[in-house]
Image (cartoon, rainbow, N blue to C red; front, side):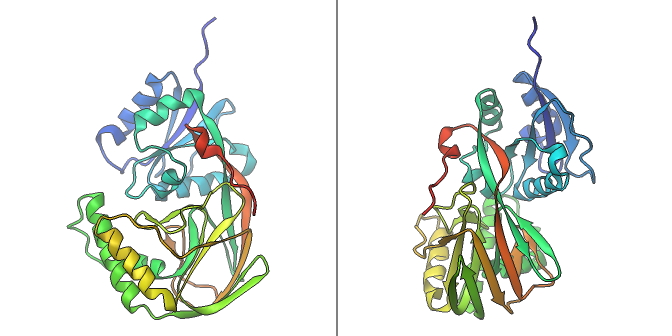
Amino acid sequence: MKKTSKLIRLIHNPTAGDGEYSKKEIVKLIESNGYKCDYTSSKKKSIGNIKPETEFIAIAGGDGTIRKMIMTLLNKKLKYKRPIALLPFGTANNIATSLHISNNNNTNVSSWNNYHLKKFDVGQVVAPEDTFFFIEAFGYGVFPKLMKQLTKMNTDHIKTPEDEFELALKTLHKICSTYKPFKATIELDHKVFEDKYLLIEVMNIPSLGPNLKLSPDADPGDGYFDVLMVAESKRKVLSDYISVIHEGKERVFTIKSIRSKTAAIFTVCKDAHVDDQIIKETPEKVKIKNMDSLLEIVVNNKKSVAIVPSK
């Protein structure tokens, strides 16, 4: 009896590039590994119905595409709940990197015949007037300021990811030297911190922005956030770290994050972000909750599945 091919739902960013990233090549790659491929463009307003026999949903694109599609799927609730596979080909690929997923499409697709599932948390930010969700990080300070400045810049000269990182790191270093600190009170699992800060980041994954590994021990499936707070007194530590990374060298960020299941932040800082989105109407008070193991991500090695034990 002939074995039935497994059905993969592919959600693909068609504007992300040609060659191995094109619709034709990715569909061809998936089908050459023995799967049936149900294609949808990430540019469509609706992803349509997910067929009951779908094995899992593959998202092909960068961090922005991955976040957008995961949020769309979560809005569909349990009707479309399936494990999610990532085919990363963005600039930073921080989400895939946190799961040790290669950016080699051939390696990823060929591993799907013997895959493992990794639990993945989602952060919920509750503000007086709105609710946000994040899979990478939520925070205040220099990083959303960087995002604002980059959106105003002429980037016609940017041709490669290396050029993009160069611009981002150079701009961030300048911001860190001049950024006006903001007062904040942070409650983490009933512990209170008060200071003037340059950066507060509630992180679900180890890296932020242009591949800056600010919380190397963060595990997106352990049920905890890693909360990073950089006070005004640590400005030089942050600035020096960015400078070293800008030079192409490696350095471990010495300011340690704090693991916490919940957080509450009170601040008047006007620079805030949720993942790669700037928050225009910045809330002065937010409560943050970890939605433990809300997603299941397809990974190709057992190392990625391990959960860090609670402390």
